[in-house]
Length: 541
Image 1 (tube, helix red, strand yellow):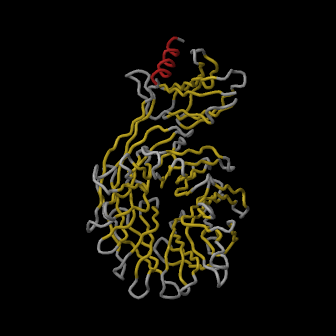
Image 2 (cartoon, rainbow, N blue to C red):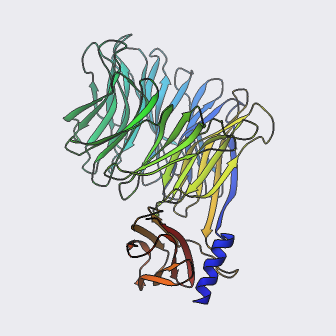
Image 3 (cartoon, rainbow, N blue to C red):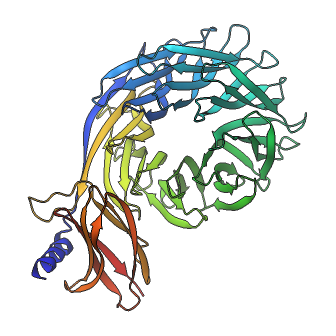
């Protein structure tokens, strides 16, 4: 009893919570010249290597793919300059389970203007295994925007192709693992309207979903989100359109499947201000729910991530005249209920801060990166970790070079490896030139009870917090052992024993019902394998 009370008093008085992040390495890629370099996508491969793909300026812009080892050394880097020796812009990247890298983008042809270019690079040395260029019916500009793989390593690419100087079609293409064209399917609502494809994904039954925009008749009439579902052979299964109220949908459009093969879509649009909509469809094409995010001012979604529990994480930007621009982090339940909405401002109150990429780990912790203005009103990389309930666990900023203006630093990509190391990629730029920067952060988190006890991977959280009268306590055990969870009041008196049993390593949840307890602060203590974590929970009636 005295020991528990002492621990609680120490936590209340000093808030001793260890939460550390360490910068392991920073690597700059400058390419062939001192031009501009920008990451578009990043991922961790099957061997824990960090892969970044983007655009790099030599005389003109080229595709670039860089593969880093966990220690930060460059394993290989590859550039692609199309046959027209003009600008080439990468738009997508995916990795297969062998570590091979697939990219797509628009590439200038000799006489065909911009064509699609899809490339497969070998995992071990980055050699080109195949390159496929696609020029549609005319020698006008064509552009891919999204790509994905299925479990058989077939490649799907979606984009737009020009029919004439005014008309565009949505194109979905399927390639075999060897790069052979399996099918190419155009979609155009009618001969008056334009259609663009921006996102493609494949469900567990190998059905293909292509998403894009259809321009309504009349140039100022706005556009609709268009969703097409194809079977594996390219036959149309259904088509759905989701309109705005006389507004325009904008790039990007984001899509992903949950564990039940429901399709989640996020689309930005403009009417008077900029807002975004989240839409969920069943595999049969039934609209399950729609949520419009309009907080006044400008709202923009840049990132979509779904966890194993089908929760939906969206990160982006919110601007209003009172706060300026802030990171916006939004989390929906599978039913579309708001679980978390958080705005995070940087060092400058009226600054422009924007989140570009976010993801979650298996414990529900949230990792976000983007740019945030510093006290000199210049953007830094700004990366942080939130608990499932939205508390900041750690945050870190990066700027390079450290002082001179007008340098800006913007992080666009974030990835997480199996050891919970965090990788960030972005640009540092001055006068339109600068390197592509990749950073690795390692993290150690936990609560220290005494100098000899350091908690590493064991975690405990609850949601909601504050609560009335029920809250769900989630906890993670890194190894098999006896587990005990006990709730104490602020005086150190034991109120409830929730768990007292031998458990295997894994993630668990249990509900705590405080209906017979008075309002106040309580302490939920998790003990396992000579380690201890404490979570302060607040009952408000």
